[in-house]
Length: 457
Ligand SMILES: CC(C)=CCC/C(C)=C(\C)COP(=O)(O)OP(=O)(O)O
Ligand SMILES: [Mg+2]
Image (cartoon, rainbow, N blue to C red; front, side):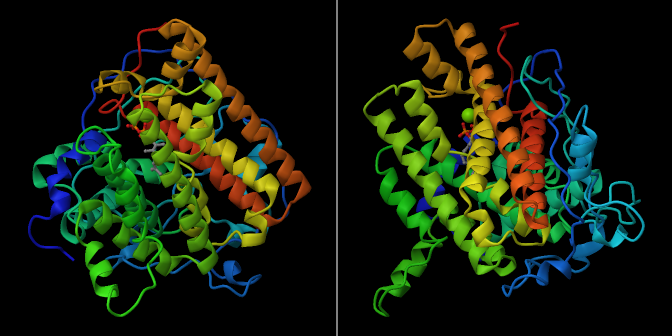
C-alpha cells in the first residue's frame, strides 16, 4: 500500500458515493428523552491496561498499532458514558460510571471530568460542524454528550490519511462526501471509553471498510445483487485468510489489493488483529460472516423482487446488521470479554437485541434516503406497509414501536445478565454495548448531511 493505478475496484468506486453521499437536511421533530431502566451495580471493576492482563492467558488488547508518533496525545478518554442517560437511575448510573470511592480512581477506564491535556495536531482539519438534527418523535433513545472535539478532529485527520494514502478507499472528488459521513464523530461518540486515539482508529477503519464494501458491492451505485456472493466471499478472505498451496497462494494474495473493498477490509483487519486477542478476532470474523449472509439474503430478495414477511425481514436484518461494531467494544476499550462469557446464550441475546435495535433505528433515519433510491429499497416501514396493508405513515409509526420494543428488550436482557453474571468484564462489556447503541443513535440523529425525517408528525 498504497496500491497504484486504477483497478477493477475503481470502476466500482463511484459506489462509495452512496455511503458517503449527501442526502438532504433534517426536518423538525420533537425530542424525546427517556431514562434507561435500572441495572444492578457490579463489583469494583479492575479496568485499565494492566488489569486487562490479569485474569486470562490471552494477551491484553492494547497497546494498539498504527498510531502516529505521539499517538497518545489525545489519550485522555472522552466524557463519561453516564451522561448518555437522560434520567438515569442510581443503579444504572453506577454501572455506567464504574467504581467509586477512595482508591478507585485507577480503576476507571475513562474519567468523565478530568481535563484533557492535548490539542489536535496542528495540521488537523476542522471537523464538520456539529449537526443538530432532531430525534424521531417517540423513538426510545438516550442522548449522549457531544463527542470530545479534540478526539473527533484527530480521528478525522487520521482516517482520511488511511483512506486516501493507505487503501485508496475513494477517489479525491468524493472528499466532501467522505467528510460528510463524519465517521470520526461517529466512532468517538460510540466508544467514549477508548483509552487512546489509536484504539479509536481500530473501530474507525473497520467502520469505513464495512461501508465501502456495502456501497461498492451491494448498493445501487455500482453494487448489485448480481454476482454478489462471489464478490463477498472473496472479500471475506481479507478477514479470514485462505490457506492454500504455494502455487495458488500468490494469486489469492494479489486479489486482496485489487479493489477498494478488499484493500479496505485487509488493512483494517490487519490493524484490528494486531490489537485483538485471537478469540476477539475470531468473534469478529464470525460476526462479519453473519453480516455477509444478511447481505446475500437481501440481494436474493432484490433479484427475485420478493417482499419478505415482516418476520422474515426482521430475521434478515438481524444479520445485515450493525452487530460487528458494538461487539468490538472490548478491543477498542483495551480489555477482553473472554470467549466463554461472550458465548453465553444470555450474552448472545443481549448482543442480538442491541444490534437489532440499532439497525431498525437506521431503517427509520434512512427511510427518506432509501425512498429516493432506485427500485424498492427494503426497510422496516416499507415492508410493514407492503405486507400489512398500512399507510406509509402508519407503517413508519409501527416501525418506531418495533424499535422501542427491541430497545426495551435489550435493556431488560442486559439488566438480567448483569444480575445473574456480575463478572466485571461482563458488566463493562454490557455498558460498552449500551453506549455504542446510544452513540449510534446520536450519529444518525445528527447526520443531517445524510439523513432527513419524513413529514409524518
Ligand atoms: C457498519 C456496518 C457493519 C454496517 C453493516 C450493515 C449496514 C450497512 C447497516 C446496518 C446500515 O444500513 P444501510 O445499508 O441501510 O445504511 P444507510 O441507511 O444507507 O445509511
Ligand atoms: Mg438504511
